[in-house]
Image (cartoon, rainbow, N blue to C red; front, side, top):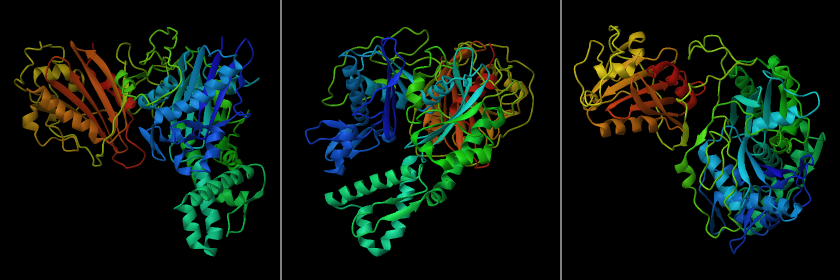
Length: 639
Protein backbone atom coordinates (compact mmCIF):
# COMPACT_ATOMS: atom_id res chain seq x y z
CA UNK A 1 0.00 0.00 0.00
CA UNK A 2 1.49 3.31 -1.12
CA UNK A 3 0.14 6.26 0.85
CA UNK A 4 1.02 9.87 0.08
CA UNK A 5 0.13 12.66 2.52
CA UNK A 6 0.40 16.26 1.38
CA UNK A 7 0.25 19.37 3.54
CA UNK A 8 -0.21 22.18 1.01
CA UNK A 9 0.76 25.15 3.15
CA UNK A 10 0.59 28.88 2.60
CA UNK A 11 4.34 29.24 2.06
CA UNK A 12 5.61 25.68 1.84
CA UNK A 13 4.28 22.28 0.85
CA UNK A 14 5.37 19.05 2.53
CA UNK A 15 4.75 15.53 1.26
CA UNK A 16 5.19 12.25 3.15
CA UNK A 17 5.24 8.81 1.52
CA UNK A 18 5.03 5.31 2.92
CA UNK A 19 5.48 2.44 0.50
CA UNK A 20 6.62 -1.18 0.39
CA UNK A 21 6.13 -1.61 4.13
CA UNK A 22 8.64 1.08 5.03
CA UNK A 23 7.99 3.81 7.62
CA UNK A 24 6.67 7.17 6.38
CA UNK A 25 9.36 9.50 5.06
CA UNK A 26 9.38 13.05 3.78
CA UNK A 27 9.51 13.30 -0.01
CA UNK A 28 12.31 15.69 -0.88
CA UNK A 29 11.50 17.94 -3.83
CA UNK A 30 14.48 19.69 -5.39
CA UNK A 31 16.62 18.35 -2.57
CA UNK A 32 14.59 19.85 0.29
CA UNK A 33 11.95 18.56 2.71
CA UNK A 34 9.84 21.66 2.09
CA UNK A 35 8.87 22.97 -1.33
CA UNK A 36 7.73 26.59 -1.69
CA UNK A 37 4.04 26.73 -2.60
CA UNK A 38 4.87 29.55 -5.01
CA UNK A 39 3.61 29.68 -8.60
CA UNK A 40 5.03 31.54 -11.61
CA UNK A 41 3.21 31.85 -14.94
CA UNK A 42 5.44 31.64 -18.01
CA UNK A 43 4.45 33.71 -21.04
CA UNK A 44 3.35 30.54 -22.85
CA UNK A 45 0.92 29.73 -20.02
CA UNK A 46 3.05 27.08 -18.31
CA UNK A 47 2.93 27.20 -14.53
CA UNK A 48 6.26 26.77 -12.75
CA UNK A 49 6.24 26.06 -9.03
CA UNK A 50 8.55 25.81 -6.05
CA UNK A 51 12.07 27.15 -6.08
CA UNK A 52 11.99 27.45 -9.85
CA UNK A 53 9.07 29.86 -9.45
CA UNK A 54 10.97 31.89 -6.87
CA UNK A 55 13.99 32.18 -9.18
CA UNK A 56 11.83 33.30 -12.10
CA UNK A 57 10.14 35.86 -9.88
CA UNK A 58 13.32 37.91 -9.94
CA UNK A 59 12.89 38.33 -13.69
CA UNK A 60 9.22 39.37 -13.64
CA UNK A 61 7.58 39.59 -10.20
CA UNK A 62 4.20 40.47 -11.76
CA UNK A 63 3.86 36.87 -12.97
CA UNK A 64 4.56 35.44 -9.52
CA UNK A 65 2.24 34.38 -6.69
CA UNK A 66 4.14 33.28 -3.56
CA UNK A 67 1.09 32.18 -1.52
CA UNK A 68 -1.75 30.81 -3.69
CA UNK A 69 -3.39 29.07 -0.72
CA UNK A 70 -3.95 32.43 0.94
CA UNK A 71 -6.11 33.37 -2.06
CA UNK A 72 -8.28 30.25 -1.98
CA UNK A 73 -11.46 32.36 -1.76
CA UNK A 74 -10.71 34.04 -5.09
CA UNK A 75 -11.72 32.37 -8.32
CA UNK A 76 -8.76 33.55 -10.37
CA UNK A 77 -5.26 35.01 -10.10
CA UNK A 78 -3.84 37.65 -12.40
CA UNK A 79 -0.25 36.61 -13.14
CA UNK A 80 1.19 39.12 -15.55
CA UNK A 81 -1.42 39.27 -18.30
CA UNK A 82 -2.63 35.70 -17.69
CA UNK A 83 -5.77 34.88 -15.72
CA UNK A 84 -5.15 31.62 -13.84
CA UNK A 85 -7.89 29.78 -11.89
CA UNK A 86 -6.92 29.37 -8.26
CA UNK A 87 -7.56 25.63 -8.34
CA UNK A 88 -5.18 25.30 -11.30
CA UNK A 89 -2.48 27.19 -9.40
CA UNK A 90 -2.89 24.82 -6.45
CA UNK A 91 -3.02 21.89 -8.86
CA UNK A 92 0.37 22.89 -10.27
CA UNK A 93 1.85 22.64 -6.77
CA UNK A 94 0.25 19.25 -6.16
CA UNK A 95 1.31 18.05 -9.61
CA UNK A 96 4.97 18.81 -8.87
CA UNK A 97 4.74 16.78 -5.65
CA UNK A 98 2.96 13.94 -7.44
CA UNK A 99 5.53 13.87 -10.25
CA UNK A 100 8.43 13.61 -7.80
CA UNK A 101 6.61 10.92 -5.79
CA UNK A 102 5.84 8.95 -8.94
CA UNK A 103 9.49 9.19 -9.99
CA UNK A 104 10.58 7.75 -6.67
CA UNK A 105 8.01 4.96 -7.04
CA UNK A 106 9.39 3.96 -10.43
CA UNK A 107 6.59 5.59 -12.39
CA UNK A 108 3.75 4.26 -10.23
CA UNK A 109 1.05 6.35 -8.59
CA UNK A 110 0.23 6.25 -4.87
CA UNK A 111 -2.73 4.05 -3.96
CA UNK A 112 -4.08 6.55 -1.46
CA UNK A 113 -3.61 10.31 -1.12
CA UNK A 114 -4.40 12.31 2.00
CA UNK A 115 -4.65 16.08 1.75
CA UNK A 116 -4.67 18.13 4.93
CA UNK A 117 -6.65 21.35 5.38
CA UNK A 118 -7.42 23.85 8.16
CA UNK A 119 -10.21 22.60 10.41
CA UNK A 120 -12.31 25.71 9.81
CA UNK A 121 -12.34 25.31 6.02
CA UNK A 122 -15.89 24.99 4.76
CA UNK A 123 -17.05 22.87 1.82
CA UNK A 124 -16.28 25.46 -0.86
CA UNK A 125 -12.64 25.72 0.14
CA UNK A 126 -12.36 21.95 0.55
CA UNK A 127 -13.80 21.49 -2.92
CA UNK A 128 -11.19 23.86 -4.34
CA UNK A 129 -8.58 21.55 -2.85
CA UNK A 130 -10.31 18.45 -4.23
CA UNK A 131 -10.65 20.10 -7.63
CA UNK A 132 -6.93 20.89 -7.57
CA UNK A 133 -6.18 17.25 -6.81
CA UNK A 134 -8.27 16.18 -9.80
CA UNK A 135 -6.51 18.65 -12.07
CA UNK A 136 -3.14 17.48 -10.77
CA UNK A 137 -3.90 13.97 -12.03
CA UNK A 138 -4.11 12.23 -8.67
CA UNK A 139 -5.63 8.84 -9.47
CA UNK A 140 -5.61 7.13 -6.08
CA UNK A 141 -8.39 7.50 -3.53
CA UNK A 142 -8.21 11.04 -2.19
CA UNK A 143 -9.36 11.93 1.31
CA UNK A 144 -9.20 15.08 3.41
CA UNK A 145 -7.76 15.25 6.92
CA UNK A 146 -8.15 18.29 9.21
CA UNK A 147 -4.75 19.67 10.15
CA UNK A 148 -5.21 19.62 13.96
CA UNK A 149 -6.28 15.97 13.84
CA UNK A 150 -3.14 15.13 11.86
CA UNK A 151 -1.03 17.15 14.31
CA UNK A 152 -2.51 15.31 17.29
CA UNK A 153 -1.86 11.97 15.62
CA UNK A 154 1.75 12.99 15.03
CA UNK A 155 2.16 14.05 18.68
CA UNK A 156 0.74 10.74 19.88
CA UNK A 157 3.10 8.75 17.63
CA UNK A 158 6.09 9.64 19.81
CA UNK A 159 7.10 7.28 22.65
CA UNK A 160 5.43 8.26 25.88
CA UNK A 161 3.09 10.75 24.18
CA UNK A 162 0.18 8.47 23.34
CA UNK A 163 -3.24 10.00 24.02
CA UNK A 164 -5.64 7.76 25.90
CA UNK A 165 -9.42 8.04 25.47
CA UNK A 166 -10.63 11.17 27.19
CA UNK A 167 -7.29 13.00 27.05
CA UNK A 168 -7.00 16.28 25.18
CA UNK A 169 -4.27 18.14 23.33
CA UNK A 170 -4.19 21.76 22.19
CA UNK A 171 -2.67 22.35 18.75
CA UNK A 172 -1.09 25.77 18.18
CA UNK A 173 -0.53 26.12 14.43
CA UNK A 174 1.23 29.31 13.38
CA UNK A 175 1.86 29.06 9.66
CA UNK A 176 2.92 31.57 7.09
CA UNK A 177 -0.52 32.89 6.22
CA UNK A 178 -2.87 32.07 9.09
CA UNK A 179 -3.00 31.09 12.74
CA UNK A 180 -5.16 28.15 13.76
CA UNK A 181 -5.77 26.64 17.16
CA UNK A 182 -7.73 23.54 18.06
CA UNK A 183 -8.46 21.34 21.04
CA UNK A 184 -8.36 17.71 19.98
CA UNK A 185 -9.66 14.87 22.11
CA UNK A 186 -8.75 11.20 21.89
CA UNK A 187 -11.58 8.68 21.61
CA UNK A 188 -11.70 4.90 21.43
CA UNK A 189 -11.42 5.11 17.63
CA UNK A 190 -9.18 8.09 17.01
CA UNK A 191 -9.47 11.84 17.49
CA UNK A 192 -12.16 14.48 17.48
CA UNK A 193 -11.92 18.26 17.26
CA UNK A 194 -13.65 19.58 20.39
CA UNK A 195 -13.16 23.27 19.57
CA UNK A 196 -11.22 25.30 17.04
CA UNK A 197 -10.72 28.89 15.99
CA UNK A 198 -8.22 30.98 14.11
CA UNK A 199 -6.93 34.38 13.08
CA UNK A 200 -6.82 34.93 9.31
CA UNK A 201 -4.67 38.03 9.71
CA UNK A 202 -1.82 36.48 11.68
CA UNK A 203 1.02 34.40 10.29
CA UNK A 204 4.68 34.42 9.41
CA UNK A 205 4.02 36.78 6.51
CA UNK A 206 2.66 39.34 8.96
CA UNK A 207 5.78 38.98 11.09
CA UNK A 208 7.87 39.59 7.97
CA UNK A 209 5.85 42.72 7.21
CA UNK A 210 6.32 44.05 10.75
CA UNK A 211 10.08 43.56 10.48
CA UNK A 212 10.12 45.23 7.05
CA UNK A 213 8.31 48.28 8.47
CA UNK A 214 10.83 48.42 11.32
CA UNK A 215 13.75 48.29 8.90
CA UNK A 216 12.12 51.03 6.85
CA UNK A 217 11.91 53.29 9.87
CA UNK A 218 15.65 52.85 10.35
CA UNK A 219 16.71 53.78 6.81
CA UNK A 220 13.94 55.59 4.95
CA UNK A 221 14.99 59.06 6.21
CA UNK A 222 18.14 58.81 4.07
CA UNK A 223 16.17 58.73 0.81
CA UNK A 224 12.38 58.76 1.40
CA UNK A 225 11.55 58.83 -2.30
CA UNK A 226 13.69 55.78 -3.04
CA UNK A 227 12.13 53.90 -0.12
CA UNK A 228 8.65 54.64 -1.42
CA UNK A 229 9.66 53.17 -4.77
CA UNK A 230 10.60 49.97 -2.92
CA UNK A 231 7.25 49.87 -1.19
CA UNK A 232 5.32 50.72 -4.38
CA UNK A 233 7.52 49.51 -7.24
CA UNK A 234 6.94 51.18 -10.57
CA UNK A 235 9.40 49.27 -12.77
CA UNK A 236 10.63 45.72 -13.16
CA UNK A 237 13.93 46.71 -11.53
CA UNK A 238 12.05 48.08 -8.52
CA UNK A 239 10.01 44.89 -8.24
CA UNK A 240 13.15 42.76 -8.34
CA UNK A 241 14.73 44.85 -5.62
CA UNK A 242 11.62 44.65 -3.45
CA UNK A 243 11.41 40.88 -3.92
CA UNK A 244 15.06 40.46 -2.89
CA UNK A 245 14.52 42.68 0.16
CA UNK A 246 11.48 40.64 1.23
CA UNK A 247 13.52 37.44 1.04
CA UNK A 248 16.32 38.99 3.09
CA UNK A 249 13.85 40.18 5.74
CA UNK A 250 12.33 36.70 5.96
CA UNK A 251 15.79 35.16 6.31
CA UNK A 252 16.61 37.63 9.09
CA UNK A 253 13.41 36.68 10.94
CA UNK A 254 14.32 33.00 10.74
CA UNK A 255 17.87 33.73 11.91
CA UNK A 256 16.54 35.54 14.99
CA UNK A 257 14.88 32.29 16.07
CA UNK A 258 18.41 30.93 16.53
CA UNK A 259 20.56 34.02 17.14
CA UNK A 260 20.23 37.07 19.42
CA UNK A 261 20.89 39.44 16.50
CA UNK A 262 21.51 39.53 12.76
CA UNK A 263 21.78 41.96 9.86
CA UNK A 264 19.34 42.66 7.06
CA UNK A 265 21.16 43.34 3.76
CA UNK A 266 19.73 46.48 2.21
CA UNK A 267 19.77 47.67 -1.40
CA UNK A 268 21.64 50.84 -2.30
CA UNK A 269 21.63 53.63 -1.22
CA UNK A 270 20.65 52.25 2.19
CA UNK A 271 23.05 50.80 4.74
CA UNK A 272 22.53 47.32 6.18
CA UNK A 273 20.38 47.22 9.33
CA UNK A 274 21.24 45.38 12.52
CA UNK A 275 18.16 43.88 14.17
CA UNK A 276 17.95 42.04 17.47
CA UNK A 277 15.63 39.36 18.76
CA UNK A 278 14.40 41.77 21.44
CA UNK A 279 13.41 44.28 18.77
CA UNK A 280 11.54 41.66 16.78
CA UNK A 281 9.74 40.38 19.87
CA UNK A 282 8.69 43.91 20.79
CA UNK A 283 7.22 44.31 17.30
CA UNK A 284 5.21 41.10 17.32
CA UNK A 285 4.35 40.75 21.02
CA UNK A 286 0.82 42.23 20.64
CA UNK A 287 0.02 39.85 17.78
CA UNK A 288 1.45 36.85 19.63
CA UNK A 289 -0.57 37.79 22.71
CA UNK A 290 -3.70 37.69 20.53
CA UNK A 291 -2.84 34.14 19.52
CA UNK A 292 -2.28 33.02 23.11
CA UNK A 293 -5.52 34.64 24.26
CA UNK A 294 -7.39 32.93 21.43
CA UNK A 295 -5.93 29.60 22.49
CA UNK A 296 -7.07 30.22 26.06
CA UNK A 297 -10.61 31.07 24.89
CA UNK A 298 -10.74 28.00 22.66
CA UNK A 299 -9.68 25.77 25.54
CA UNK A 300 -12.43 27.30 27.69
CA UNK A 301 -14.99 26.84 24.90
CA UNK A 302 -14.16 23.13 24.98
CA UNK A 303 -15.14 23.09 28.66
CA UNK A 304 -11.54 22.65 29.79
CA UNK A 305 -8.78 24.50 31.59
CA UNK A 306 -5.10 24.50 30.53
CA UNK A 307 -4.07 22.24 33.41
CA UNK A 308 -6.34 19.49 32.04
CA UNK A 309 -4.50 19.38 28.71
CA UNK A 310 -1.92 16.72 27.99
CA UNK A 311 0.06 19.49 26.36
CA UNK A 312 0.20 22.24 23.77
CA UNK A 313 1.73 21.10 20.49
CA UNK A 314 3.46 23.69 18.30
CA UNK A 315 3.23 23.22 14.54
CA UNK A 316 3.82 25.55 11.62
CA UNK A 317 7.15 27.09 10.77
CA UNK A 318 6.44 30.42 12.47
CA UNK A 319 5.90 28.68 15.82
CA UNK A 320 9.69 28.53 16.01
CA UNK A 321 9.66 32.10 17.37
CA UNK A 322 10.98 31.77 20.94
CA UNK A 323 8.44 34.36 22.07
CA UNK A 324 5.61 31.92 21.31
CA UNK A 325 6.76 29.36 23.86
CA UNK A 326 7.54 32.06 26.41
CA UNK A 327 4.08 33.62 26.22
CA UNK A 328 2.28 30.28 26.36
CA UNK A 329 4.20 29.30 29.47
CA UNK A 330 3.62 32.69 31.11
CA UNK A 331 -0.06 33.08 30.32
CA UNK A 332 -1.33 29.48 30.45
CA UNK A 333 1.19 27.82 32.74
CA UNK A 334 1.90 25.10 30.18
CA UNK A 335 5.28 24.63 28.52
CA UNK A 336 4.51 23.84 24.86
CA UNK A 337 6.05 20.95 22.95
CA UNK A 338 7.75 20.92 19.56
CA UNK A 339 8.69 17.29 19.03
CA UNK A 340 9.75 17.43 15.39
CA UNK A 341 10.26 19.86 12.55
CA UNK A 342 7.09 21.97 12.92
CA UNK A 343 6.84 22.28 9.14
CA UNK A 344 6.52 18.52 8.64
CA UNK A 345 4.41 17.54 11.66
CA UNK A 346 1.01 17.79 9.93
CA UNK A 347 2.00 15.81 6.83
CA UNK A 348 3.64 13.08 8.94
CA UNK A 349 0.66 12.96 11.28
CA UNK A 350 -1.83 12.43 8.46
CA UNK A 351 -0.31 8.97 8.04
CA UNK A 352 -1.40 8.01 11.54
CA UNK A 353 -5.08 8.95 11.10
CA UNK A 354 -7.38 6.03 10.39
CA UNK A 355 -10.23 6.63 7.96
CA UNK A 356 -12.77 5.77 10.66
CA UNK A 357 -10.84 7.28 13.54
CA UNK A 358 -12.59 10.63 13.93
CA UNK A 359 -15.71 10.63 16.07
CA UNK A 360 -17.28 13.97 15.21
CA UNK A 361 -20.35 14.41 13.03
CA UNK A 362 -19.93 14.03 9.30
CA UNK A 363 -19.76 17.34 7.49
CA UNK A 364 -20.89 16.74 3.92
CA UNK A 365 -19.93 18.84 0.93
CA UNK A 366 -22.59 20.06 -1.43
CA UNK A 367 -22.59 18.55 -4.91
CA UNK A 368 -23.52 21.80 -6.60
CA UNK A 369 -20.56 23.60 -5.06
CA UNK A 370 -18.09 21.01 -6.22
CA UNK A 371 -19.56 20.92 -9.69
CA UNK A 372 -19.20 24.67 -10.00
CA UNK A 373 -15.42 24.54 -9.85
CA UNK A 374 -14.18 25.51 -13.31
CA UNK A 375 -11.95 23.29 -15.37
CA UNK A 376 -8.75 25.20 -15.98
CA UNK A 377 -8.17 26.03 -19.63
CA UNK A 378 -5.33 24.02 -21.02
CA UNK A 379 -4.90 21.99 -17.85
CA UNK A 380 -2.25 19.34 -18.20
CA UNK A 381 -1.71 15.97 -16.63
CA UNK A 382 -3.72 12.75 -16.78
CA UNK A 383 -7.25 12.80 -15.47
CA UNK A 384 -8.19 9.23 -14.69
CA UNK A 385 -11.13 8.46 -12.44
CA UNK A 386 -9.69 7.72 -9.02
CA UNK A 387 -10.43 4.45 -7.27
CA UNK A 388 -12.41 5.27 -4.16
CA UNK A 389 -12.74 2.97 -1.19
CA UNK A 390 -16.30 2.54 0.01
CA UNK A 391 -16.57 4.15 3.43
CA UNK A 392 -20.16 3.92 4.64
CA UNK A 393 -21.87 7.26 4.91
CA UNK A 394 -19.09 9.20 3.20
CA UNK A 395 -19.84 11.82 0.62
CA UNK A 396 -18.33 11.27 -2.82
CA UNK A 397 -17.75 14.55 -4.65
CA UNK A 398 -17.95 14.74 -8.44
CA UNK A 399 -15.09 12.91 -10.10
CA UNK A 400 -14.99 10.20 -7.46
CA UNK A 401 -13.16 12.02 -4.68
CA UNK A 402 -14.16 10.97 -1.24
CA UNK A 403 -14.77 13.09 1.82
CA UNK A 404 -13.98 10.95 4.83
CA UNK A 405 -16.73 10.74 7.42
CA UNK A 406 -16.57 12.57 10.65
CA UNK A 407 -14.51 15.62 9.81
CA UNK A 408 -15.07 18.63 12.02
CA UNK A 409 -17.32 21.46 11.01
CA UNK A 410 -16.19 25.05 10.46
CA UNK A 411 -15.98 27.68 13.15
CA UNK A 412 -15.50 27.45 16.90
CA UNK A 413 -17.15 24.31 18.29
CA UNK A 414 -17.83 24.47 22.02
CA UNK A 415 -17.91 21.10 23.75
CA UNK A 416 -20.32 20.65 26.62
CA UNK A 417 -20.30 18.29 29.53
CA UNK A 418 -23.16 16.69 31.39
CA UNK A 419 -23.94 19.85 33.35
CA UNK A 420 -26.66 22.22 32.26
CA UNK A 421 -25.44 24.67 29.65
CA UNK A 422 -27.00 28.14 29.48
CA UNK A 423 -27.81 27.71 25.79
CA UNK A 424 -28.73 24.07 25.46
CA UNK A 425 -30.13 22.91 28.76
CA UNK A 426 -29.33 19.42 30.02
CA UNK A 427 -26.92 17.38 27.97
CA UNK A 428 -26.15 13.70 27.97
CA UNK A 429 -23.12 12.63 29.92
CA UNK A 430 -19.91 12.53 27.89
CA UNK A 431 -18.62 9.18 26.75
CA UNK A 432 -15.02 10.04 27.52
CA UNK A 433 -13.23 12.13 30.13
CA UNK A 434 -13.36 15.28 28.02
CA UNK A 435 -16.59 17.22 27.53
CA UNK A 436 -18.65 15.96 24.64
CA UNK A 437 -19.74 18.09 21.70
CA UNK A 438 -23.55 18.23 21.52
CA UNK A 439 -24.60 15.82 18.81
CA UNK A 440 -27.64 15.71 16.60
CA UNK A 441 -30.26 13.01 16.83
CA UNK A 442 -30.09 10.23 14.31
CA UNK A 443 -31.71 11.23 11.04
CA UNK A 444 -31.72 14.94 11.82
CA UNK A 445 -28.17 15.99 11.16
CA UNK A 446 -27.50 15.38 7.48
CA UNK A 447 -26.22 18.92 7.20
CA UNK A 448 -24.67 20.68 4.29
CA UNK A 449 -22.52 23.75 4.72
CA UNK A 450 -22.62 26.33 1.95
CA UNK A 451 -20.58 29.49 1.55
CA UNK A 452 -22.67 32.58 0.86
CA UNK A 453 -21.67 36.15 0.29
CA UNK A 454 -23.72 39.08 1.49
CA UNK A 455 -23.07 42.74 2.13
CA UNK A 456 -25.43 43.64 4.95
CA UNK A 457 -25.02 43.04 8.70
CA UNK A 458 -27.73 43.42 11.30
CA UNK A 459 -26.42 45.25 14.34
CA UNK A 460 -29.35 46.20 16.55
CA UNK A 461 -30.91 44.38 19.48
CA UNK A 462 -33.88 42.06 19.11
CA UNK A 463 -36.80 42.26 21.46
CA UNK A 464 -39.46 39.64 21.61
CA UNK A 465 -42.81 41.37 21.33
CA UNK A 466 -46.36 40.49 22.03
CA UNK A 467 -48.37 39.29 24.95
CA UNK A 468 -46.96 36.98 27.59
CA UNK A 469 -49.74 34.46 27.72
CA UNK A 470 -49.99 30.67 27.80
CA UNK A 471 -52.54 28.66 25.82
CA UNK A 472 -53.74 25.19 26.67
CA UNK A 473 -51.63 22.51 25.02
CA UNK A 474 -52.92 21.62 21.56
CA UNK A 475 -49.55 20.80 20.01
CA UNK A 476 -50.61 17.17 19.71
CA UNK A 477 -53.29 18.03 17.14
CA UNK A 478 -52.20 17.46 13.55
CA UNK A 479 -53.56 18.98 10.35
CA UNK A 480 -53.42 17.96 6.72
CA UNK A 481 -51.64 19.99 4.06
CA UNK A 482 -55.03 20.97 2.63
CA UNK A 483 -56.22 22.27 6.00
CA UNK A 484 -53.06 24.43 6.26
CA UNK A 485 -53.26 25.86 2.75
CA UNK A 486 -54.66 29.16 4.08
CA UNK A 487 -54.29 30.70 7.56
CA UNK A 488 -57.33 30.09 9.73
CA UNK A 489 -58.58 31.27 13.09
CA UNK A 490 -55.96 32.24 15.65
CA UNK A 491 -55.88 31.71 19.40
CA UNK A 492 -55.02 34.28 22.07
CA UNK A 493 -51.30 33.87 21.48
CA UNK A 494 -51.79 34.38 17.74
CA UNK A 495 -51.22 30.78 16.63
CA UNK A 496 -53.30 29.08 13.98
CA UNK A 497 -53.77 25.39 14.58
CA UNK A 498 -51.19 24.61 11.90
CA UNK A 499 -48.67 27.02 13.45
CA UNK A 500 -49.16 25.44 16.87
CA UNK A 501 -48.45 22.06 15.31
CA UNK A 502 -45.17 23.50 13.96
CA UNK A 503 -44.30 25.19 17.26
CA UNK A 504 -44.83 22.02 19.24
CA UNK A 505 -43.89 22.21 22.90
CA UNK A 506 -42.18 25.60 22.55
CA UNK A 507 -45.59 27.26 22.27
CA UNK A 508 -46.37 26.04 25.79
CA UNK A 509 -43.03 26.79 27.46
CA UNK A 510 -41.93 30.09 25.90
CA UNK A 511 -43.44 33.56 25.98
CA UNK A 512 -45.25 34.06 22.66
CA UNK A 513 -47.34 36.78 21.06
CA UNK A 514 -48.55 38.00 17.65
CA UNK A 515 -46.17 39.73 15.23
CA UNK A 516 -42.56 39.41 14.10
CA UNK A 517 -41.05 41.31 17.02
CA UNK A 518 -39.37 44.68 17.02
CA UNK A 519 -35.77 43.79 16.13
CA UNK A 520 -33.97 43.44 12.76
CA UNK A 521 -36.15 40.47 11.86
CA UNK A 522 -39.35 42.46 12.22
CA UNK A 523 -41.25 42.66 8.96
CA UNK A 524 -42.78 45.85 7.67
CA UNK A 525 -45.19 43.74 5.61
CA UNK A 526 -46.48 41.48 8.39
CA UNK A 527 -49.98 41.45 6.92
CA UNK A 528 -48.65 40.40 3.54
CA UNK A 529 -46.70 37.56 5.13
CA UNK A 530 -49.77 36.17 6.86
CA UNK A 531 -50.22 35.16 10.49
CA UNK A 532 -47.06 35.72 12.53
CA UNK A 533 -46.16 34.79 16.10
CA UNK A 534 -42.91 35.52 17.92
CA UNK A 535 -41.69 33.58 20.96
CA UNK A 536 -38.77 33.95 23.30
CA UNK A 537 -35.80 31.63 22.74
CA UNK A 538 -35.01 30.07 26.13
CA UNK A 539 -31.27 29.72 26.71
CA UNK A 540 -30.18 31.60 23.58
CA UNK A 541 -29.27 35.15 24.52
CA UNK A 542 -30.50 37.96 22.28
CA UNK A 543 -32.69 35.63 20.21
CA UNK A 544 -36.33 35.12 19.27
CA UNK A 545 -38.27 32.42 17.42
CA UNK A 546 -40.85 33.59 14.90
CA UNK A 547 -43.50 31.44 13.19
CA UNK A 548 -45.31 32.42 9.98
CA UNK A 549 -48.43 30.93 8.38
CA UNK A 550 -48.88 32.49 4.95
CA UNK A 551 -50.81 31.87 1.81
CA UNK A 552 -47.92 32.39 -0.63
CA UNK A 553 -44.82 30.25 -0.41
CA UNK A 554 -42.97 32.64 -2.74
CA UNK A 555 -43.55 35.60 -0.42
CA UNK A 556 -42.32 33.61 2.57
CA UNK A 557 -39.24 32.44 0.70
CA UNK A 558 -38.35 35.95 -0.42
CA UNK A 559 -38.58 37.20 3.15
CA UNK A 560 -36.59 34.36 4.74
CA UNK A 561 -33.91 34.48 2.02
CA UNK A 562 -33.44 38.12 2.94
CA UNK A 563 -32.98 37.15 6.59
CA UNK A 564 -30.29 34.63 5.69
CA UNK A 565 -28.35 37.12 3.59
CA UNK A 566 -28.73 39.89 6.17
CA UNK A 567 -26.21 38.33 8.55
CA UNK A 568 -23.38 38.90 6.08
CA UNK A 569 -22.01 35.48 7.07
CA UNK A 570 -19.88 33.18 4.94
CA UNK A 571 -20.78 29.71 6.23
CA UNK A 572 -24.22 28.14 6.00
CA UNK A 573 -25.50 24.87 7.46
CA UNK A 574 -28.44 23.07 5.85
CA UNK A 575 -30.31 19.90 6.79
CA UNK A 576 -33.68 18.21 6.72
CA UNK A 577 -35.85 17.80 9.79
CA UNK A 578 -39.00 15.95 10.76
CA UNK A 579 -41.35 15.83 13.72
CA UNK A 580 -44.97 16.17 14.86
CA UNK A 581 -46.19 14.76 11.52
CA UNK A 582 -44.29 17.47 9.61
CA UNK A 583 -41.24 17.31 7.38
CA UNK A 584 -39.07 20.08 6.03
CA UNK A 585 -35.60 21.57 5.92
CA UNK A 586 -33.64 24.28 7.65
CA UNK A 587 -30.78 26.61 6.76
CA UNK A 588 -28.56 28.56 9.17
CA UNK A 589 -26.27 31.49 8.47
CA UNK A 590 -24.16 33.62 10.78
CA UNK A 591 -22.06 36.75 10.71
CA UNK A 592 -20.22 38.70 13.37
CA UNK A 593 -23.27 40.54 14.68
CA UNK A 594 -26.20 38.25 13.99
CA UNK A 595 -27.22 34.67 13.30
CA UNK A 596 -30.37 33.24 11.75
CA UNK A 597 -31.83 29.79 11.15
CA UNK A 598 -34.84 29.45 8.84
CA UNK A 599 -36.96 26.26 8.97
CA UNK A 600 -39.69 25.43 6.47
CA UNK A 601 -42.37 22.77 5.97
CA UNK A 602 -42.30 20.91 2.68
CA UNK A 603 -45.97 20.71 1.69
CA UNK A 604 -47.59 23.76 3.29
CA UNK A 605 -46.97 27.53 3.60
CA UNK A 606 -45.51 27.34 7.10
CA UNK A 607 -42.11 28.67 8.05
CA UNK A 608 -40.21 29.87 11.08
CA UNK A 609 -36.90 31.40 11.96
CA UNK A 610 -34.60 31.84 14.94
CA UNK A 611 -32.90 35.24 14.88
CA UNK A 612 -30.08 36.15 17.27
CA UNK A 613 -28.20 39.42 17.64
CA UNK A 614 -24.82 39.85 19.33
CA UNK A 615 -26.14 42.55 21.62
CA UNK A 616 -22.93 43.20 23.55
CA UNK A 617 -20.73 43.67 20.49
CA UNK A 618 -18.10 41.43 22.10
CA UNK A 619 -17.00 38.32 20.26
CA UNK A 620 -19.32 36.98 17.58
CA UNK A 621 -22.85 35.70 17.26
CA UNK A 622 -23.50 31.97 17.38
CA UNK A 623 -22.04 29.86 14.58
CA UNK A 624 -24.38 28.12 12.09
CA UNK A 625 -23.66 24.75 13.71
CA UNK A 626 -24.59 26.13 17.12
CA UNK A 627 -27.85 27.50 15.74
CA UNK A 628 -28.58 24.11 14.16
CA UNK A 629 -27.97 22.34 17.48
CA UNK A 630 -30.27 24.76 19.28
CA UNK A 631 -33.02 24.21 16.70
CA UNK A 632 -32.78 20.42 16.90
CA UNK A 633 -32.76 20.36 20.69
CA UNK A 634 -35.15 23.18 21.57
CA UNK A 635 -37.30 24.32 18.62
CA UNK A 636 -37.84 21.35 16.31
CA UNK A 637 -41.22 19.78 17.20
CA UNK A 638 -41.01 16.31 18.70
CA UNK A 639 -41.75 13.09 16.88
